[in-house]
Image (cartoon, rainbow, N blue to C red; front, side, top):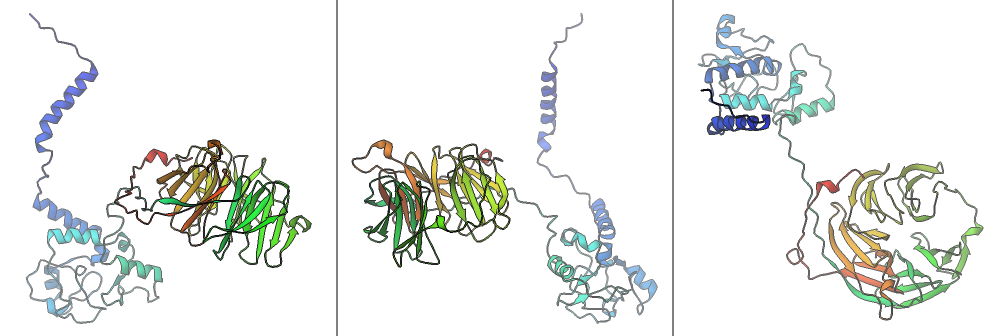
Length: 480
């Protein structure tokens, strides 16, 4: 009677075969392959001769020395074998594994004495250590730094780059043969948290812009109450109020070259305030040098720098434009953002910049706007960005939240949502502008509750009390 064979799916049969194979070889899995000494010696001899023959001067056997005579013994390259080595009981003479004379015709001393045939481990390390370029370039370098050339080679000096390559790779492993380290995500630098220590009130409307003067003595703010106010940075007291705009003041900046303060507003005016002579100049009366056209919607932010590109703009048309000031036209247009770009900031030390939009904060590299990474998590309308030389990036949003980031890694190490001024509505919690002072020890924010808030680092914080909770996600470092 024939037994019926139980039918299984191909999937089941394959896995059963895998299990049998695993059980068969699992005992020998960790065992090294036994080394056959004879085949290993032969392999190393062939490798030394075929691969590194030009460098090792073709290892010369002892019998050849006897045939050629003790006085005129020479290898196939014409290198004379010196009397100091005659009579030694060696199988091979290898002239590339030890210090050798600085040039032909120099007698060997005890320090430059030719060694015996290296052991298997030494021969293997020798094969790894010799650079692959040496197969092409037979020039070698003496230990004292003098150059060693083969007989018959040109006396013309080699290029400095070739010599430096030979000097550097003479006693080191070839970088091409070294195992490469697996790429790792850099750990973020620890930054102390920032805390609120002063609230300055005085404006009668939203504080829309802020700037610190180069001497770090005072700062200036512009507001929806149509005034510009100058405050003492150390005490926070009001020093001066400037009136002249007939609508909201949207931008202020202090010149680093002259005692001028520039302001612009919703009244379509740009004013230059001479702080030395108390005069006001309407910039519209001056002739324009360039009109940079290209954006298809309102330009929300403009940044300037000495290096190229000199002007960077962000717009409500979702694009960032890098401008060629000499030609007066766009150099690069970045279209990665999907929503309005209201803020752009340049790093004070690195040749990089960041842009803020409700979809993401993005980092870019000059001069062509190469994308670096996304800083995700601040899910709000980002009105302002600022960064200090220590790598602390600050983003302020329309809902009153402020996030602090590590510039290099994009790690969000602190989130702040300060309370509104008493008497204001919770809906008036919004940050329109922020800036570090010149010492970068204080952070100033201009807010919708009509106040200026001043932050500084928490001096009591340590890495133990505020540890870095870094959990990198490779998926976040996507293309866009």
